[in-house]
Length: 399
Image 1 (cartoon, rainbow, N blue to C red):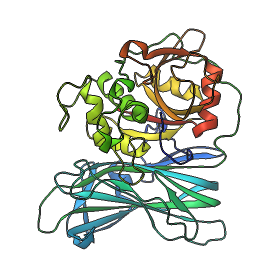
Image 2 (image 1 turned 90 degrees about the vertical axis):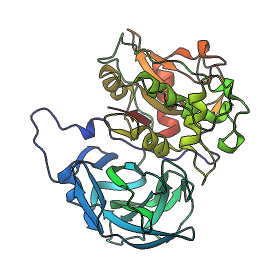
Image 3 (image 1 turned 45 degrees about the vertical axis):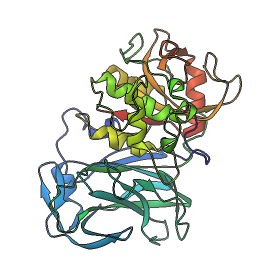
């Protein structure tokens, strides 16, 4: 199933980063977790959000929201807006990729705009590049990303900001907007990003960890039974691996939103609904990593985010904690033994557990029917394909 028409971009990490080590105390700066070439930074607590710069916003419990907004126009429409700008996050290495993810409340016709910029080792600061306009309702401004903007230090490729020369620090800015004169309670609860470089480099196969022998009871949905559904949201079938995977994880938590605007008679209509809710009108697909987690975050308790993991051992930590992990892979003919499709240049599936020997139990939405979704893949094969294709990109939802 295709994630996007362009080549896969480099992705992100956040899982244990949001949880301080045992015995740690709260800090006013953002919590981070770093490897030599991957660093996640996220702002979500009161103290962390307070450390950013606010304009037209107020601090609340667990979020920032509008206080004295200023006029703003988007797509020819009048809004009132306020901005939250993060402190500079320092990477410690020249990062060539940055992927933001966020959690926001956007009732009615409100929306948020997410921008990033970087600074290189020589101290040159780039311009702000718009990554996305996002809202849950998709109106009146359709949620979308803004690929291009290749000007100074970087450019946007759908959900990823790429910097060929590398940056050593970065910022994210979120603009909260609502129609002028309204009182809609648009809010920002969390925003973060992962910076990385050389994340697709080969590495040794990981050894089994704490989730060996654990399989989570995640419901199985097939993307293929939706072939031809709703062309305006990608048309189902091979185009819907991401929303199908997201729908399976939400169902694992007992969340199955009542589908809206879906034709009667569709099996597992919640998959169609999820495709509608994550569709990116910029690159015209449902595989936008951050759009999937931003939507999920409106439904689940706990954080939902896009991350990068170094290996399946980190995915085991999540499964052991009861959280399935959605991973982004690609493979050619004969490279993934037991796969229901012969090849894919971009595919997402759910890691639901591990066998005692460490092999990976998955819900692969490319199965022809719901009964053919559950699979077991060789650990070394799957891990190698995951790292090579997307640098260990994963969605963690509700953990």
